[in-house]
Image (tube, rainbow, N blue to C red; front, top):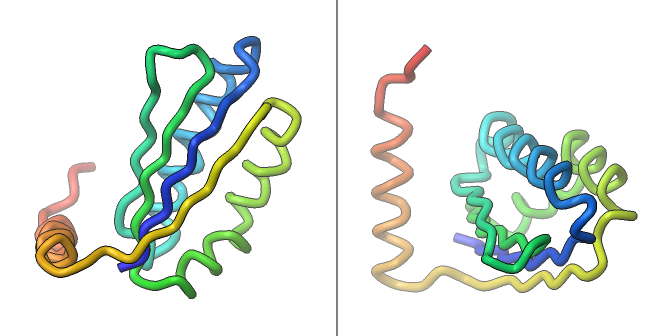
Length: 114
């Protein structure tokens, strides 16, 4: 599994708009990209600070995410709102990877709620 964490520092005047758009991007990523298995959006007590935690089945899957239409729209729309963006990538190891895979498998087998 390939893990991506992103720290966004958004201009406070755009924080609410950014929140709406980043949540839509996360939802689209999970729904439209089968290789995107986790996409969590978090905020801190600091206004305009957002933290993303994303898990993909591979680095190549993350590369595909970066070319997805919904991501490109998100990136273009929010570029002028962001003061700073820090992206880090990791490989999920050992038991954590197995636990994550079990969680993914369980979620895929769960009945969808309409």
